[in-house]
Length: 260
Image 1: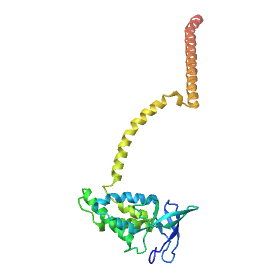
Image 2 (image 1 turned 90 degrees about the vertical axis):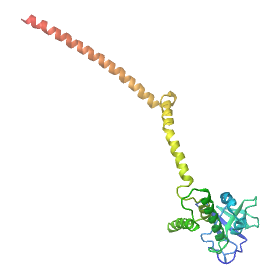
Image 3 (image 1 turned 30 degrees about the vertical axis):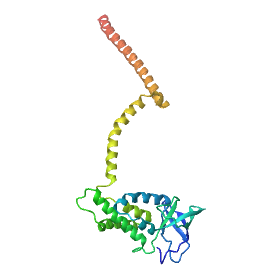
Image 4 (image 1 turned 90 degrees about the horizontal axis):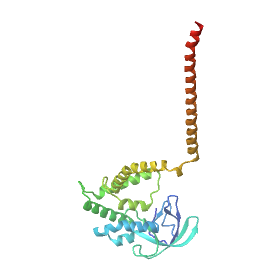
């Protein structure tokens, strides 16, 4: 990604189809490679700060965070989903201005951004071990292995991993069986259990509401009514025929007597 030492003054970023921002052009192409270089937008910066807040009581170092990113402010909207940014000296954690944050990935293994990832991973593990009732305590190596496995899976599938996703994967990490997903699933199941009764009651009200009937329904009801009248007429005709037959039967014996 990046090479040498950071000497950026400005950069041009674009909004990708994944709704993340990616670097298109930089003022220092010698030291920085923009191929696959992602940048964190102001909305994402705010979200990261919110996720970091619980780590403060476990020893979060603000300076580690500030050294990990190069802040940029918006200078000009270039249109077609592109924006020109200029480097600023305002600290991300204290600035009231909406700033972009470019992770300092000059040295991906031992640079300030790598130090930041290591710092929040250790604090996240420390917090989980203290707050959760775990049979076996988590280790930093264990968590890093799980996160790395997920990243490798995305890499094999050809997905570009945005650095915002890399950071939030650490700050949102929870061991299996202790996450919010389980609670959400229980809540959803409880809601689903109550829904059928409500739906059945509403269905009955709708069925009995004449204002919700379509013309076709009315025609069908009229058709059924006509059918009932025709059936009654048919029954009456059948009764008349039966009476006629009975009369003929009564006449037959008389005729027979006369013939004798």
